Length: 247
Image (cartoon, rainbow, N blue to C red; front, side, top):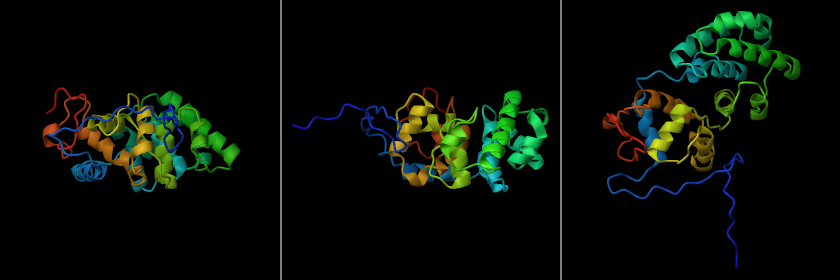
């Protein structure tokens, strides 16, 4: 008799996925369809600004280095602050060599409005130096290389690779984590677990755009507290997991 493996399944990237049981069907909800949900989100966010990284790309800052710089600046910083700061820094240094020449003190002065500006300045300068010395001034499209830099985790590495290199990568920030779990599309406690669950379940065609769609959706509609459920286009299929005070 064949014995069923007791090991947890792995996502497409090799991460272990600890599966939670599916939510039981609800007669008051449509079956959840991720293609339909994202199409509705796409319409719902038309009037909102793009997330900072995608706006940087729209303004011509499409290199992997520029995208990585922008993402590091965005950590724990609102997009409304990140975008002008990133544009100011990149107007002075768009390449690793140019950023290396600026030095940490000048970088810090340029990025002062973002949170943790001093350690970010040191990290950015160190990345520029290493990129020049080890990679001839051009970052490779390699997640392991990016995540070997201090201050760069899967979120930034995946987002930069998706936008700049066209790689199918999922970037999970707090908005993506909250929304897909609130929908009941995945069941995970941490962004890292959500990433693994999405890699195992989400169609690859949606991997890069998921962050672009769900960041503004999470900021303006499916908010952390008092989400706007009454006007949300995904409500008919959303499980509203953990929602206690909807608007």
